[in-house]
Image (cartoon, rainbow, N blue to C red; front, side, top):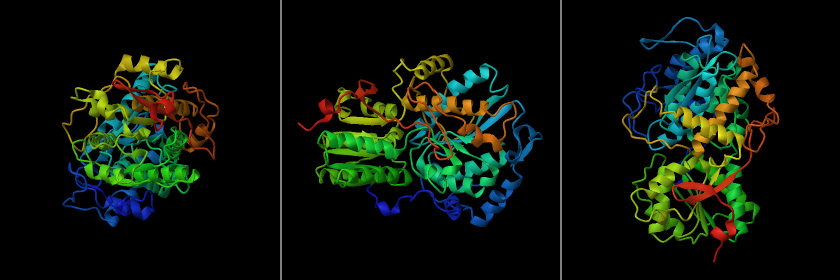
Length: 481
């Protein structure tokens, strides 16, 4: 289905937008609000949360939340909708996570978690951070904004989390940012979300988040620059119809304008679209504009469907994806069950925000291999999924799990810099002390009051068999013949 771009999520909005978003939450997502979320995207529940009830049951209670006290001060049990929730113990630091552990994008949340746990297991097995274990409190949002808002309220109010960590996606993060701004005095920060969008990098919300990865603006600019350099100036865009897709769309438009070009064409799809959906309409729209290349801003199921149908319908041009797509999941879908697996992958080129997980010349990649093999983290079991029973086969290594690994490594360093008594009031100070830090990827990390993104490098990869490898020569691979 091609959707008018006017209906897309506009991105982070005002505090009122948070409440408007929460009106669609259904029973079961948040025990605190008593709402339920079903398995279908966008369905309307039997009981909507009103702005007033959300304030009464959740936001208004934040002033007295357990996480408003220093970590060691949380002692007695917290009553949580009929059961006891154990607050953070003196020997623990609890990080709150809302991510996609179910639904069509479950591979992203799962792999990001697995990479993080490889590092955290190593840290905890060696005495923790200044004697404290790092514990993740996991919640599933299915890559949907409404559950993410409810999960965040729950994590801040009921779960004694020290900070928020490892969120997945632009449409989810952009709806949480106004919540963090509204309660900025409580100093709950979001660290290293799996998104390159601009809202958490710019005013008015940039001060409440820290990013490690490069931005979508940087990724799309690099893709456009390389396509233009080899003569492919007519660039079209296929994008998810929400804040994520629009962020990438804006990046492509801005990059093309720098070369005196405009988009050759554009087509959209709805978030949650699966691989078995037809993308014929989108392919035909773009095909009619005779593009030289297509840049996709989406998740792996829909982007794989587009790449499949583009080949089948004769649109034989480079199809690029940004890092969020989940390269390994994308490739697996396109290769599965085909006599000629390369037939539907030879036109792909994906940007990445971490180096190749096969580049063992890098210290962090060597650590990643060693710890992923030692711990081999399973998909999480300690999370209530919106949709149960969905199969998922983890990858031994992936770009997403490597990013999760680096996120975990850096947050551990930041917590360690706070000493024996970690306190939220000193988080920014600890982050800003990270200057020229060697994380082990060949690019050093620095933060400061005017710099809330640690890394800037973008990498380019192409399929080789069942993996993506570094692209060495754009000209020989993709030049117009």
